[in-house]
Amino acid sequence: MAKSLAERDGSVQRSLGPLHRQIKQSKILMVGAGGIGCELLKNLVLTGFGEIHIVDLDTIDLSNLNRQFLFQRQHIKKSKALVAKETASKFNPNVKLTAYHANIKEPTFNVEWFKTFSLVFNALDNLDARRHVNKMCLAADIPLVESGTTGFNGQVQVIARGITECYDCTTKPVPKSFPVCTIRSTPSQSIHCIVWAKSYLFNELFGTSEDDAPEFDHSEDAENAQEIKNLRQEAEELKRIRETLGQPEFASNVFEKVFNKDIVRLAEMKDMWKTRTAPNPLSFQSLGSGTNGDAVTIPDNDQKIWTLKENFLVFADSLDRLSKRVLQLKGSDQSNLLSFDKDDDDTIDFVAASSNIRSIVFGITTQSKFDIKQMAGNIIPAIATTNAITAGLCVMQAFKVLKKQISDSKMVFLSMSADRGLTTEPLRPPNHSCQVCGVARADFECDVDKTRLGDLIKKVLQDIFQYSQSISLLHEKLIYDEDYDDNVDSSLSQLGVKGGSFLTVIDESDDDKTRKINLLLQIRHRPQKDSGVAFYTPGKIDIPLRQAQPPSLESLVLSGTDARTSKEGEQSRKRKADDALEPNAPERETNKKMKSIAEVIVIDDGYIEID
Ligand SMILES: Nc1ncnc2c1ncn2[C@@H]1O[C@H](COP(=O)(O)OP(=O)(O)OP(=O)(O)O)[C@@H](O)[C@H]1O
Ligand SMILES: [Zn+2]
Image (cartoon, rainbow, N blue to C red; front, side):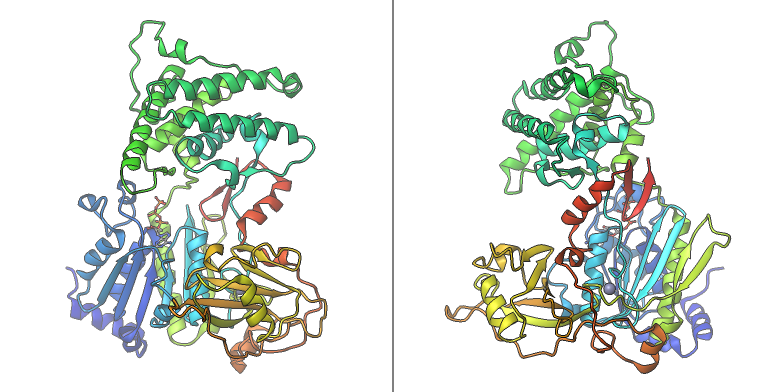
């Protein structure tokens, strides 16, 4: 028989002792209410945490129901955060639950808001959001329990400012990219055709142009410079075809261009096909005419390998569905761009059919829509049990944090392949060259529309914080250094800086004795009506110098020293802006990594499957 609420509370109290009261008084935040989040919320509510806030930006999808047990069929298309709250509140009405159907990166979730929690849990599925919460928790000085699962593997890590390493102390693999020529000219595997359909063709027709898409390497080495020029020209032509969207000839225009004209041109480059099989162009007319008399219809089995004719029908049909959506959006106030989503049938149909037709052109084995969905969505199947165990481990680690026993917390790994299912590692101390946590911090209150970057550099960084001329400034990417001053007359907002943004200031001076550690400047936007004042002059702060060696975790815990402010020696290594860009600059990192391309596709946030 199910236990009553009071009985259950009694059991929890007996097992946790004095911690029980502390748990009841805790206000905690859970970011993400998906696979781990649903399990975690159930645990947190049943453990009796007093107040829980839940943030998730997504709505419930049919494919979530096999493992996200707070959701049922009738909840499809409803907010994950709100439904999770509703379902979980029935488990324990004494817990105060607040749900936000929102992106955690929204400015309302600012540092002050983060400071109101005793503890934060990440139950996210992407690097970007994880990094953001990591940064916010460090800024607010609130401990974070970070977790993730992929297939049978799970991981839980406690992050506490100045005591443990943070999420960004170690480099995380960035999504892998492919040489542009393999994708655009010489594909040899299905994945190359899938990347082409998803990241190139789809975006050129319905989304943003691929010029900056991370999956492509545009480093123009001698070998592919000419080819890249040709490809740019092809892209221009595709842009013109995009203008015919909605007209009856749109499908044939697209088809003839990408599966005929471009292929004919490629096939003519004889040198390219000396060691490879040359591609064979296809014709829209002959495929569309239904020559063999069989009534071929649009297939509805996504596990079956479709014939060329079936792929052709899906191609034309999905192109039509997507075009109608774009036209509809054009009529509304919204942006008329579509983005790929593996759970959106129109986009996955288009990608499956286009990549299969391309595979046929290049003599590559075609794939079922189901398999293409897996590859295009970079999915390793999520396993409910892994999520459940990982969510349990999160709560166990949270107990240690609440008991102020962070030194007893461990990095916990769940794995099928290890001798033991669960293994642990001691938490590592902060990495002093980490640009997210090995930093000094300051606030800068200003009107981001009125403050010029040049003023920030001269009047604040140099005059008040005593930086020399040799600095670099990063905001997601490099926005200033001694040799790159193109942005000094731009306002902060023109550079994408908003209230709540962080700028990283890197001291690039050559003098080992005076070089400061990185400074993380948090921007607080204060609109100024008065035309004269654009910003408030911050008070002077003492920015520590670089350190030689990070102190050990034990010494930090025992002495309570804040690693960010201790001045144990100075670091003698000159740190280049390029190094410092890691890991917040995916664009640069991608380009660097392109030099050693393997046929690798990154699954979700950092788990790599070798193709
Ligand atoms: N920036 C963000 N702000 C708020 N919630 C986020 C953010 N990024 C991701 N999430 C949420 O984190 C959750 C992660 O859960 P999970 O890994 O199970 O993904 P899912 O989308 O539910 O499943 P799948 O990707 O396997 O279909 C999702 O519900 C997602 O909406
Ligand atoms: Zn760090």
